[in-house]
Length: 113
Length: 113
Image (tube, rainbow over all chains, first blue to last red; front, side):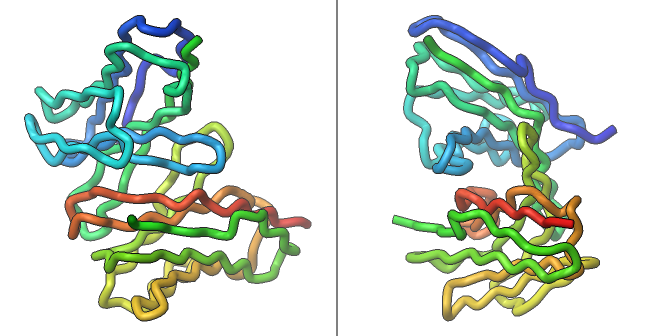
């Protein structure tokens, strides 16, 4: 089944404790993105990647890092999480077909205390 | 900066009627615009893409229009059903097709029997 998977789905952590949210897609897509979703603000792009080893900042990259060493994986790293990074995070991958359709993962709900 | 606006208030309609949702944007000429559906606690699901040189796109009961002069897209669901109740998001491509997207905050649609 074609899908985007994220882990963990839920995470409660404390300020300053480094964490990684994994994202994997099995559709051989070149483009992948990370978003955060907050009430009233909608989805905001954190980082996106056009291919292996090619990444660029989205609208809200501060406090986040990403890497794209393999085509299928695009982990999101929070080196020193803070409470304002409490949010719902989505990973997405994009088909290169005519619709540029984004396939979203199930989301990771992160709480930073 | 780029701004994208959707009706912030929920749209309530009767089953069988046509729902019309609005997406307005400023300060940019996007290569394309997409519409997504999001159910509570889930990732968005792609519905339709319309390009800057297209006026209208249809898919089953869905219709999207794109007026680049007015900087507006309208999203219509005809013969609406309670199962259509969800939040609908519009998204603009800001990178000429390289998948740097900006999303609206979404409009919640409730279809009543």
